[in-house]
Each structure stands twice: as structure tokens, then as C-alpha cells.
Length: 496
Image (cartoon, rainbow, N blue to C red; front, side, top):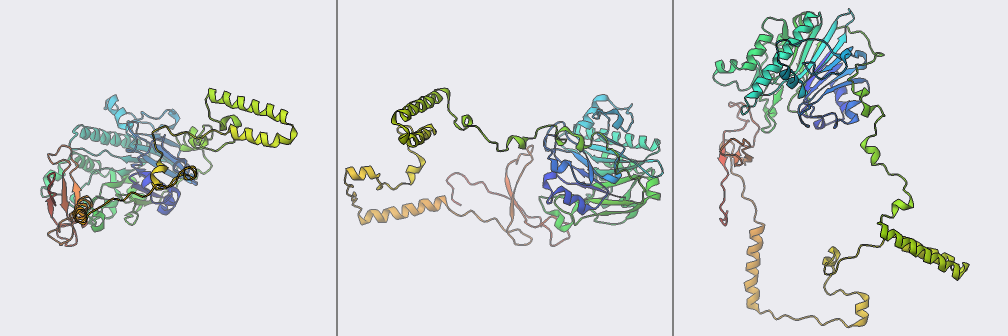
């Protein structure tokens, strides 16, 4: 069995159709984080995939934020599936995987699940035991929002409690996802000089505790304990992926029994792009029971009303349909009465004139029925009139009067000489070329301009220049140099 974990940074950021992406990953169970899609915005192309059962959890707070998904091949149809970690989102009790949180506050549990950061599936092994897959997108700590650290630690606590509950039940457990923490200094390009401070991070302390007693195993480090520069995430703005200057924050964690008996391999698929993260693929020698003909859990997207054909889709309202004559004539009641009166008068004339004029009268009545073009208000010119030469006149005006003689304006040579430099100066002022960026100190190449985005900074909104090369280690001569320069603010009327 092959399982994949990948923070895709938005479903719409994928460079290929979802079906093609799943086939390229070539795994039995594929877990996405940060899908950034809600149920209302989920298109059918992402919800019903041939050969897969699909399960989503999305943020209940805002759109374009968070979200996770699991795609299981139909042969591995789960016996249970559940949104969230705290058991506050599932409505069908038969789908729940069980577990209680007696040590956590009810409001904290509800907050954990409302952001759409976890989804779980339970699969049946050939020997009758269960395999539980937990897919998580752990919160990131915002330095400006200390309450987010509390939320993150609560999320970690709920994840650990739920995973240990499954072990007590006799299940095998695999936790995959973006944990938003680099565990050891070897897992980051820049751990800093103070390693004590680095290791004292609450998130790292929790992660170390999770895998300290070998009840749970970091699969990649279990197989590759000393591999350096094995990163899974890179900063996009500085193109840090070019120089492999990143962090390892994506993991596949499994329980100790699985690692000793069933773990075969774990690799980073760094060649797969379209996100600031790369996929992680782990292989296990599990023998799962074939459940191709089994019914998936009720939260599977194929059972959603919008994908069962029982609910009208927005596209159905956009379909072109045959309209009646009444629909084609969009007039108010007064105009409609006028049209009916014209038709009646025309029909009377047809009867009086006899059959010889019947065809002509009917044609006239049809012409009268057509809605008249909107007249231009007096004193208002149409857009088309601005493109007609002033010397052009209508045929009627030409027939009535002779064209006027062109007006001759006497311009002295001195006025021509004085006017030309003035016009040139004006146009040069409007279309003057921008000032080229400065050259960086390290490579003598043109810099790129950036802007301070931190709203709490006194320099918020200011522009500055930095080296245009990709970010990298300080000892890498091909990486970005340390050039920094504020962009000068020109005063009004000051020439550049």
C-alpha cells in the first residue's frame, strides 16, 4: 500500500486536472492539505473522481482557507470516515470512529474542528484489524496573535489523544500531513545560532514527546536518520526552492508496530511542483481486504445532494432555452398596449385593402412590433460621433447646403518655434522612463523591488530593493547576496 501526503496550497493551483494529478502520484491513499475550498465552492471535477472515493473537510469560518481531503481507491473503501479530530462535525453516528476528550473544554473542541484541519478514514486489514489514517493540517503560530499558540497546542493535544485511543482499540495508526514545525536543526536551513532557544519551542517539545518513546515513529527519519537538506517546503517569494533552502515540516508518522513490521520506504517527491510543498510518499506492506463493492461512509462526496442529481446546479440556469414571443418583447405595460393597438389598426387596413396588399401589410406590422432603438437624449452625443470627422456631413445636409470653406488660421513662424519645445517637454514629462533599479553589491545585477507587508512595522508600505537571485545558504555564491536598499521617496515636483 502506498500513501501520499501533500500540502497543495489550493486545489486551483494544481497545474493539471485532479484526475491526472492522482494518477501521477500513483498511490492508493492520497491526502491533501490546504485545499482552500468550501463545500459551496467545490466543483464536481474535484468531488467525483473515477476510481476513487473522496472525503473533504473544510473551514466553517471563511472561504479560501485551510481544508483537507482524502482520496481512497475504490478497492480500499473505508469502513468509517469522520471530519475533524474532536467528533463535533459528524452527523451520522455510524460513521464516527469513536474516542472521548474528558480533559478538554467543549468550546476548545468545537474550535479545533471548525477550521477544517483534519479528516480520518478507517480501513479493514486482511487479518481483521483496522488501519486508521489521520490527515491533518496543523495551525501555524502568528507572532502577532499569541492565542494561536494556545489553539495550536490544543490541536496537537487532541490529535495525540485521538491517536492513542485508536492504539488502545487495537488499530494500526498512520498520521500524515503538514505539522507546521521542523523537528530538529537538521530539518531546517536556518536553525539559528541559539540551539537551546530553537529546541525550547512548544511545538518542537510536543513533537519530541510524541515520538520519544517509539510508540509513534517519524517514518522518514526512521529510514534516513542522517540525511541532510531533506526539505519539504520552500519560500515562494524568494524562489528558495531553486537552491533547496527550506524546511521539513511535512511528515508521515506511524505507530511503532507498523514501522517495525510493515514500513518499506519513505521518500520526498521534490520533482513534483505547483505548490510550495512537495509530496511525501510512504510504502507499507499491508494486506488490505478488497472492498471494491462495499458502500463508502455517508460523508463521501458522491452522496452529497449537489452531486447526486437531486439538486439543480447553477449551470442549468445558464442553459439557452426556447422563448415565446412574449419573452422576446421586453416592454412595459404601456408599450405593450401600444403595440397591440398598432397590430389591430394594421389588420383592419389589411381587410380593407384586400388580399393583394395582405403580404405587405403583415410585413409592416412585423416591423412595427420590433422594439425601437433607444433614442439619444438631446444635448448628449453618442460615442460614435467622436470618431466622425468634423468635415463629414449627412447626405441630407449636403443636398440642402454647400460645404463651408475651410477656416484659415494664420500661424507665424515664431509661434511654431515656441510651441514645439513646450509640447515635447509635456510629453516627456508624462512618458518619461522609470528609474532603473540599482545594482546589488554582490553580483552587480539589477535588484528587484519589494514592499514591507507587516502592518505593525513603522515601515509598513515602504518599498525596498534586494538582490534578484533566489534565497540560499550564506556560503552559496550563487544565492542571494545581502544587498538591501530603501527606495527613495521623491517629493512632489522633484525630478528623477
